[in-house]
Image 1 (cartoon, rainbow, N blue to C red):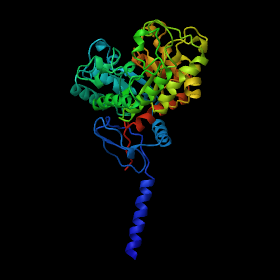
Image 2: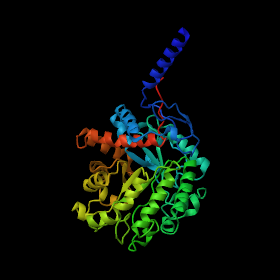
Image 3: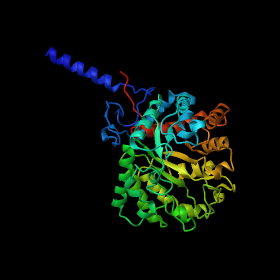
Image 4: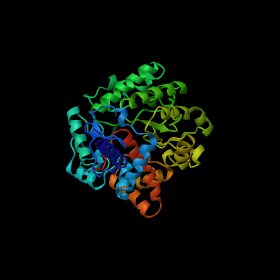
Length: 423
């Protein structure tokens, strides 16, 4: 009898210790899937092979993940938090290598990463040659992540000049199937499977974030852009997005819808010149918003905001959408209800650099409500601009905390950021 009582007491003590275990913020984090991952109280972790989907037993609810993210953010310095809000091109970390292919991590780039670790690295054909080389490069990059593991992002729409697969011979990605070939032409199951095949291959290369798909409704006015959109019919776009996002998310790849609230019925090149989308808000609500809502329901992680001006909403004839609080916060965040990561478009586009200084775009986009700044031309200057804006009280640090909590929460839920219980 006494022996039984002692066993019961011992079990109660062990259960109490487990229940009271506090998850640490992770001053040391692991590389992406391929090493142990753990997901929340009572979960001890396990081995995840490269490219694998995070097992159900490791998944956390939104509230659990957000609570953990807030705790992690509280332990971060302001400098660490600012870094998390940037997705940078590897070539911009070393000015001497800016226009050259970078297949390995240069010493200067490594030093820059260690000084101010960004939230993610964007890889293009200038960084990716073969699978073996890419895995080694990503391993080097994640080795610099002494705080929060990196997003490793590419732009893969399934084919065409904007897609990585069209420029890297070793990356086939489901046979270069363009969105325009999917919308209306294939069944939901076929679209889901195609998207899943693309995601599976990217995950096998240790890519964890895709800056795709395009969620806009195509227009006959922009023929070069049509191939990147699923259809001119909003219902076909909604169906395709739901299947496409679900297919990629189910293979463990984070997705990005772009370019909210839409490029619009324009005839020019939005990358080369600052264009105006003259659609009314009423028309956008009726036509443009529905596909984004479908993508959100399907579980998209990020939404990239357009760089075109929308004067009927902002009044300002030249203000890009991503710098407008009325569009980013009032419409996307509050009216549509998207609580994921809101991104700027690539700040290196000529249409933006010809009209705005980089520092202004960075500060104004965060004031508008963006969480992540994508591809600044000079990471150091952009980083300092945002850091100084907080020091000068132009931006409240609470605003930074909110964005970083969203980013860290997403990394936790996608198995990118490993958490370990204190011993």
